[in-house]
Image (cartoon, rainbow, N blue to C red):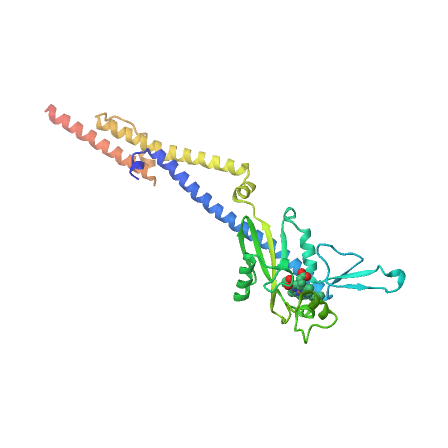
Length: 313
Ligand code: HEC
């Protein structure tokens, strides 16, 4: 503050402009950040909707069958030989349960595509469906607080998770072993995974769907929303600010200061360029100051004339 006191009015005003500019940039930045989060959340949510619908459709059908082939890396739940006659031995069907189908679809989505997703559970039958630390926390939070979603940012990735609830169609593979799970599915599942992940009831959280979307860094984000127009508007507002403060504030004060200096040196006949009739009504404090100064000057002149007259006598 002390350093500022010695600067000219013009410097102070420009500094004020810069401070206001900085604060408004900061506020804009916060808005952009919030908008970005909302866009990411909306995007993730609609991806989740689509996957949940697809899974529900598959679960409703009891899984989908592929004929004569399956993805070697992903495997299959069980097989079915359609025609046992000698010449048709090769017609084999492979069962894809919802989680397997989800894994197969998610292998197609990658970051180049814009996102990745997977389904994980705290009670995972399949090793690759084990949650990472973020997903583990999300499962706890979703179960503990009955949350509709949990999201966050980790290592430049926007992460979104949503619960997968057990519906009627899920019971034939995840329900009560005695009541809901029937043969031959029962033996198929137990042979492959043991008695893991049974005993769920409708409405239980079976796991979560976990979506990752790369989050653009703030520099890219800011430059992507800025255009030459913003630069033009910035230059124009700086120009308006400079002209405004120069012609309406700084120059009138400078003129008054000059006048005061001249008056102090005895130069009484100076013209402030005022039109008293018109300017008296002005609400501008500087004009009012100039009028007061003008009156002061007139009073001094009257005094000086009287003084000269008495001297002559
Ligand atoms: C046809 C049987 C079947 C049906 C129906 C089924 N699942 Fe599964 N589910 C499985 C099998 C088998 C796995 C083992 C993991 C894998 O294949 O990826 C699994 C795995 C999962 C997983 C991943 C965690 C893990 O154990 O590896 C979740 C979550 C899941 N299922 C939820 C559901 C939900 C929710 C439904 C109903 C919408 C459902 N499943 C319907 C058979 C089924």
